[in-house]
Amino acid sequence: MKNLSPSLAPGFAFVLVSILSFAAMAFAQKEQNAKSARGVYEELAKAPEKARSRANPLAQDPEAAAAGRLLFEDHCAECHGENAEGGKPGAKRRGPSLRASEVQNAADGALFWVLTNGVVRKGMPVWSKLPEPQRWQLVRYIKSLGAAAPEKTANATP
Ligand code: HEC
Image 1: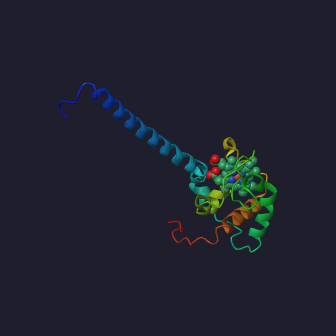
Image 2: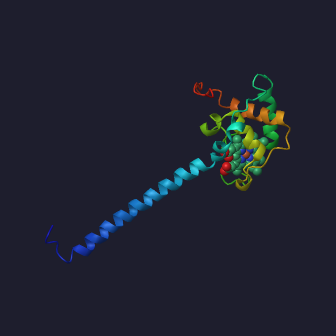
Image 3: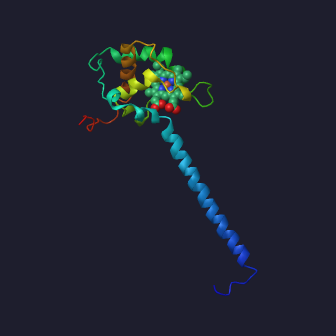
């Protein structure tokens, strides 16, 4: 390749630059996708340890999930979908699916914390006006949606 003809060299350089910039664009796009997928649920990960470790006082209440379901229909379905599957594309008020593993694997206390504080700048309202027991009922309902998921064993707080 020492004698690369002068007429070919610019073409070669052009192809090389094209390949490199395409690779860079593809990489940037991938980064972007990863970010937005994580983004919707990232608030749950921000719950302070003290809030996260709060146990659901209604954990043993057999009526709690059903009561939570009714509250969900009244307050949440509008954005999160009738069955918490996420708002329909194009809907004006739209929230993510609550059946996602990020939500199902979140601690009850972290969900309660998000309900209490909202993620207002991203369109998730504050629900502190609902009495605490109702917020815990909602948490029970949300978690009941993942009942078919495999048992979590690594949940015991150290
Ligand atoms: C006005 C629309 C709207 C309503 C009503 C609404 N949500 Fe949301 N919700 C959102 C949006 C938007 C997000 C995503 C916020 C983000 O990007 O972090 C969200 C996120 C969440 C999350 C995930 C937390 C996270 O990390 O963002 C949970 C859990 C949740 N909502 C539960 C509820 C429950 C339970 C109700 C009813 C009491 C409710 N939402 C009502 C719009 C709504």
